[in-house]
Length: 206
Image 1 (tube, rainbow, N blue to C red):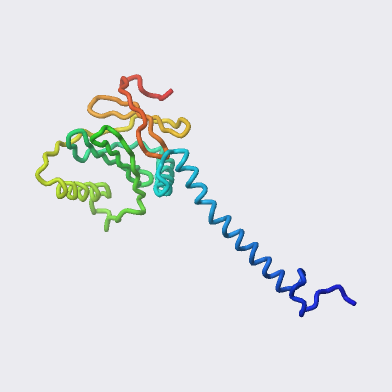
Image 2: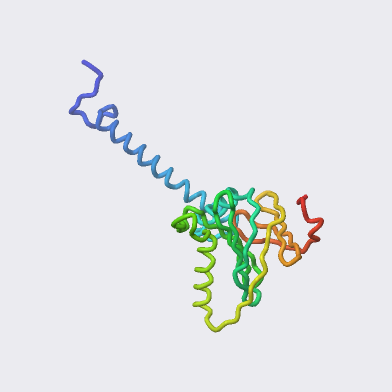
């Protein structure tokens, strides 16, 4: 008698139905493992960098934009200042991506990036530059939200030089004739340390 499984003997391990079920189980397991990888990655980054879990994807995207635009020398245009709070905006000429430097009232400085392809495009070459489109809108919303409060025009700022050091970017920024050496977390986008340095001796970064 043949050892081949009978089509009526479904309990036999080699029966086509059982082989199909086994393949389905393996596929489900593979999909489950693949789906768990991003979650595990996010948990790791959240723990390592002390960032809320629900912000990890945003911070990873921000880190990717920083890496993409690392070679750009960005000059920041000051928007407004209120007390110790300041907002400065600059763009990379190569990519068009926009960098926003936010100096909060408590002295904490953070960098945020906006990818060029996420912004509304000018209708023609004669239209105002993309930065000119963004800045007035930001100013208008700030004015509406802070009507009756006095604002002072902040000074422009430029990045003189920068270098990567581990998970940080060390950069020297100049504003109003004063230079500051900043240690910026690539992942968090926050300035972890800043110190005033002589402008004529700050670059190159060692």
